[in-house]
Structure formats: structure tokens, C-alpha cells
Length: 120
Image (cartoon, rainbow, N blue to C red; front, side, top):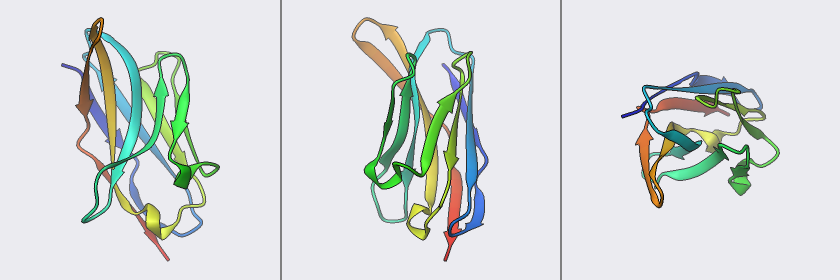
């Protein structure tokens, strides 16, 4: 099974920037998409941004214009550039990788999460 490892979280003041990285390894199947969710205390995990193997991106409305997702040419690492951070962005950020196992069946693997804290 693919391994997913995040890095780059931390503490930043409102208006600041952070860059998260997510590296995958050990996949035997094509990774069809990768992305980021976040989960704040007491709330459900929510999609932040995603990118397909073809480079199609999607963003939550709350981060459009502030966050950018990108991937390496090898398509096994994604980055989330977060600018103009707000206190409400504070959460644990989880990266996921979606593998295409067979036609119609995909498997999602999650990373361990990285904490992002934005102080006001």
C-alpha cells in the first residue's frame, strides 16, 4: 500500500504563509488524485484542495484565491501553498492519495496529519 507523509505545518500569525508538502512512496498502482483535507477540533474533516493526475484542481470556497495546490512532474508529491492565513484555517491538515486499483475501484490512503495553527 502507498505511504503518505505530510510535512510543513506549524504556527504562523494571521496574514502569514505556510507551505505543506505531501510525499508518497511504495505505490504499485496509478495515483489518480491527491489532495488535502483539514479537521478543526469538534468539526468534521473537510476538503481543502485536490488535484487529479491530469492536473485538474478543486478548492473549498473558503480558500479560493489564498491557497494553491500543485504537484511534481512525477505526480508523487503535492504541495499546498497557503497565503493570507486566517485563524479559522487552524486545523490538522491531512493529505490523501487515491490509487486506481481496477476500473471502478479506488483506494484512498491518508497521511498522519500535520497541525497548522494561525494566531490572531
